[in-house]
Length: 142
Image (cartoon, rainbow, N blue to C red):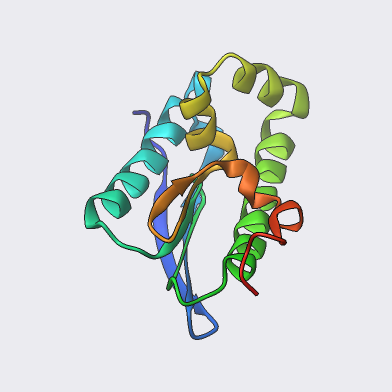
């Protein structure tokens, strides 16, 4: 991995939502975003090894964790915002075309780790399409 500055800052947003932000110097990112994939993989792996029943979302820049007592809808709203901010930063830094070309060359699991993020609801893996909480609001408890 190239020298990439990575620092973490944890904050609580409300009584049940915890956010960890990682400051990443994208100027030193490796071609193919392999280093971004590794950063997020370490975070996701540590969560999955816990065997927790919490809600969890992670992309290279941000991780969000909430008690399973928080409704899926509330959690998905926060995760969707984090995903959008991350994608916006990637595209502003590297350009939409370059990011889209790079992501299209990656396997689905790598694309999730680098771009859309990895999502767990009630401790179980969920497809990132669930981030579009409006489409799933009928299924999500209120």
